[in-house]
Picture 1: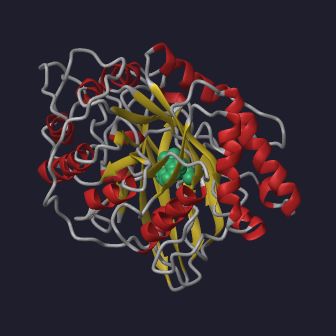
Picture 2: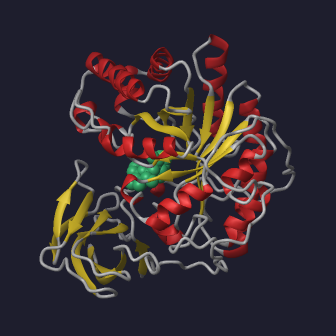
Length: 476
Ligand code: 9MR
């Protein structure tokens, strides 16, 4: 099996992608569009000819996740500045990024995104203050009293730094379990502080920045199901008791195992009816061509049909930088060509193309990055070269894009139970979970344009023969 994943500067993938996702019926039946009223400012240009401008026509924003390390790439920055009027830092505001060491705050990467957004008049969604993932080990190691202090301090420091610059904060992210239990997810916060940590986080957040909208954000809550019911009940309870909450984010990561639910609009509407805004916060839909385009169109129409759906954010710009790059889930191909999905979204938003830009016919694939930009890129393709009872050898082939590179970096995430017993032709650094290795060259960092090298590793399966997840390749 070969899986191609292409160039990006992302971090390790969330374990959430491996969770069983609730399969819901596909379809957009009953989706209708309405027009909102509020005028928005934004950088998007001619009225209705870009995503941002078209969304602004109904008083909404159209945003994207942004990674600070791509802002210097001209195709990336140009597409961002032309098409979008809102951004969410993809990783740069997470706890591990801003407070890796207790009370030492590093805002430089997040600041670069926020100042870019401000200079272009874009809204910024703050993502995220309290989350079990990308949480430094010093936090998880704290006892209850200290953890409470650390949580409130983190919220206070980060929100103070960005006070006045953030449209909406994901105050708490992914606090509920998947599946039918409707229970809260086990986390250091949940386990040590109990259910009350969520409302405490919201109250602290309100006390710091009363102008920012305060959101709860989660995935697998896009349709009506046990998990979304649990979130719904929490929001209802918060509203009844006056706990400050202004919005609910629906991540909306869709693929064939987790398709756009047929009751997506109805679900957004029932939350809106509780008196909160709703937002589509991390939209991506794996696939290609007209099927992908139709799904995107249905999602946009669902938001437009809910008056309190204030905006949509896609989780990245070109496919090559997606956390699910191999599924080509975004609106732009690797060369920033507009895919069929782009046109479908623009049309659903009520806009129409001005004829500029390139158009991808939407045939899918899209794993060859970088041509046309001149910037350094690479792809990483995984192959299982040998398997035996109890284990296998994996090989990752790195191929430079259209420019020569002098270094590369690839993350490999092992499956549950798996361990490695050896890595060759690469240098490894492990994360604190012991599951994610970042592999960089040992001697083989310099590659001419289009040239390849590979590294390999042995995996002890311990009952799990699934291929490890090989993340995007970052070139230098
Ligand atoms: O897109 C993000 C990716 O670069 C990171 O490696 C990953 C690490 O957890 O987080 C991704 O973003 C996640 C978001 O912060 C929360 N919802 C799920 C997103 C996809 O995993």
